[in-house]
Amino acid sequence: MAFSASEPFDLAIAGAGIFGLSIAHAALKAGLRVAVLEADRVGAGSSGGLLGALMPHMPARWNPKKEFQFQALLNLEDHIRQLEADTGLACGYRRCGRILPLTTTDKLEHHLERAEESKLRWHPEVSGFSYRVEPAGSRSDWLAPEAAPFGVVYETLAARAAPRAYLAALGSFVRMYGTLIEGAAVTGFDDAKGLVQLAGGNVVKAKRLVISGGFAAFDLIERLTGERIGRGEKGQALLLEGAGLENKPAIYCDGLYVVPHDDGTVAVGSTSDRDFQDAIPSPERTAELRKRATAFCPKLEGRTVLAEWAGIRPRCHKRDPLIGRLPGFQATYAATGGFKISFGIAHLVADCLVAEITGQKPRHALPATFRADHHFGANRLAPDG
Image 1 (spheres, helix red, strand yellow):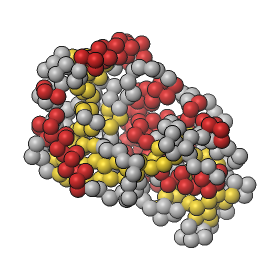
Image 2: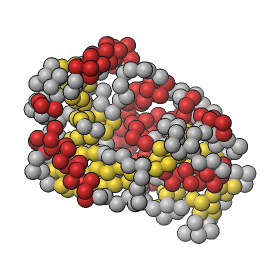
Image 3: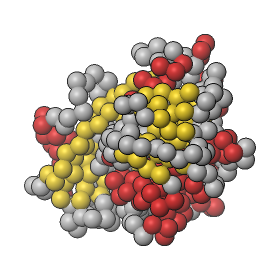
């Protein structure tokens, strides 16, 4: 592997997951010369999963993080449609909506309050998206009535995308307009000299580096800063044959998502395990996922398992993602820790980070809790939180 370019890249990005590729896409759109350096292959980590759920936070206890995610979900469709036009590749995006079962009178009362608050937070008169409580028996052609004895919430902001298709489109864009090298593991960065060190002794010249390699990013960040600010959590999902279910809404029930996709499949997941030995799918977990999902979604009964997936998702100890320049460095940045909301916010995170790098104003301000000051030094949390 040779990198003989005499001129340094404006930006090197370690990791070709959803954050890394989205940042590369935004940087290329901004006119920067970009290289993405991926230790394995595009989507090899947690971004290469099956679920594709793009779900909003509840419209309650509103804060800048929830507002940021709301704004991201509002404009994600336009972002994806433009990416599809630029690359000719479909991303499997659809505004599918979501069903939440109500199992107690307390939950019914709680969500009636959330429905009222959604009118303030989601601005339905402008956005067109609603959060409604419907009576028992609603949506029973999809969700088992006995799973929702006190009715359901049906909200229309939720969407889904096909994760691997979305990554493929982003990767295609980067290959067309920038540089994407797979099998190039970043091991360090000389912030002063602008040299990215790779496993095997190669170096890449770059004015800046963004560390965005999923949960493995925490290792590199620790080597550079001396602080451990995140961990990995294992998730597992499966893909079922789902012909005829393509236009059904997503369901969130019993801690699981059921998400139909355009290609006649249904994704089910995902679990979350803090203690794990590997990233290999567990047959026992697969059987558990299928049994639990079928219990509240009978139309999944008897459908063939097409694929299983497991991966290690990055989670900062402070829960919010880490986005921005690392403390004590001038040209070293990070973008990791999105955990379960990465696909929904990645394009807006990318816009914010590239705006910071280029000295521009972002479309929507990055929450202060995403910044390095929130994660390092006196504000750092131990792994147990």
